[in-house]
Every structure is written in structure tokens, then in C-alpha cells.
Length: 274
Image 1 (cartoon, one colour):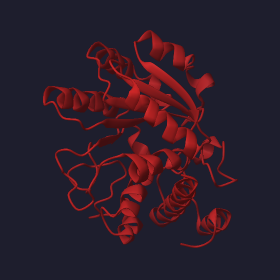
Image 2 (cartoon, one colour; image 1 turned 45 degrees about the vertical axis):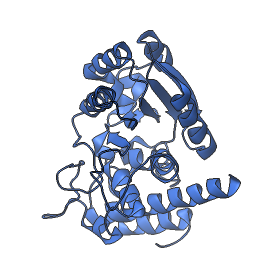
Image 3 (tube, rainbow, N blue to C red; image 1 turned 135 degrees about the vertical axis):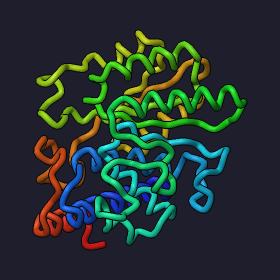
Image 4 (cartoon, rainbow, N blue to C red; image 1 turned 60 degrees about the vertical axis):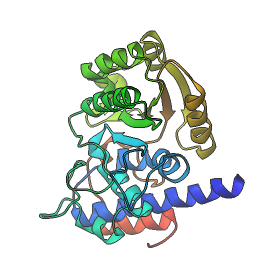
């Protein structure tokens, strides 16, 4: 297992390097919340989810919904690393005629299971996917990733209530809890705490982990799969801009692309050029 953990850590590093490079090329996008989620997506796509890059619409695949759609760079980098499309496409992010828009588009990008961007709606869609799986008696699982600031959206709590009511134990939600949103600290903009108590009150199984510990991410997913009768939310404590020192815990890197010199420094910290 230790060898596998090291492999996953290396993949997460490559994904972070891709994020920095593609955002520098595009000149716009969201690095902070993409870098904070890289470890979670790495474990999902390279250790857990049943997906087939050669058959993106495979009916029995596990589903993933990036509810915080502005973090599209981490999803695109992960899908490219997994082989859904050539990594060269990453350099076309946000460009005219590119299949990689600023937010995920299920009609234009192989491997994207739901178009997202309006916060909270991706989470709601993931609940619908999980319900469909139950109705169709399928054994696929649905995973979704929300930003912590996203919990300020009322639709999140409507969907959370529905998921518990319908006993969607095939649904696992991750909260990328990095403490920052576009306008500053969550606690200053609109406090979302106590997150764990709120989800428990809505009938969810709640786990708390270090969102940058590959081991804890793997273990939490296994615990979610073992939980029957209720959906599971994994509150993952993360660092916005993780892996790049001058971006870490800096709100200004929520939606600002690095310049060439900043890219060079970031790639050096992450282990050199791609």
C-alpha cells in the first residue's frame, strides 16, 4: 500500500503542475481552490472510481460532480492525466473553440459528468444521480466536491435534506474546507460553522479528515462505502493554493492566474518543469 500511496502523491504533484501551467497560459482562472482539491481528485480517479477513459459515458461508471465548478482546472488536469483527452488540450483552457471552458461542460469535455458553475446546483445534481442509481438498481457510486463557501447557498441544504430522506448511501460528498472564498475568510463573509453538526442534524454520516493526507482520504472513502442507509459527507481540511508557497492561504489567489515568473517559481517548488 505504501508504494501506491507514493504513486498517488506523485500524480497529485503532476496535477498541481498542470494547473499552474494551464492557468498561466490562459491568463485567467482559479488556482487556489484547484490546488487545494488535487489530492482528493487524485484518490478518486486513480484509486477509487470505476471509470473508463475510452468509454466516458459507460453506463455503470462511478460519477463525479465538481459542484464548485470554478475549480475546473483541477478536474481538467485530472481527466487529462487519466487519459480522457491529450494533456496538450490543457494549454487551450478558456480559449475560443477550446473544449475546456472556464467551468465544466458535460457536452464538450470527455469525462465531465455534469455541467457546473452556479454554486450548489452541482450538489443537487449529484443527489439526482444517486437517486437514479437507486431507482435503476445500479451499483455505481456518486461523488461530489463542494467548496466551503458554497455551503452558504440554500440549495445545498435542500439537497442535503433530500439525500438523507431518500437514504442515498451511494452518495459521498467532499467539502473542500480551505477557509477562504472570493471575498475573504468564510467566517468574515458568512460563517458556515459548525459544518459537521449541521450535516449531522440533516441526517448525514459525517467524517473529518486532513484533505491533503492520501491515507486519510482513502480511509474515509472506504468508511463511506461501509455506511448503509445514509449519505456521507467528508469534511476535508485543506490549504488554499496547496503546494505553492506564495499562494497558500492567500485569498487573492482565488481567481488570479500566475504570471510567467510566478509559474517558474511554482513549478520549481513542485519539482521542476513538466
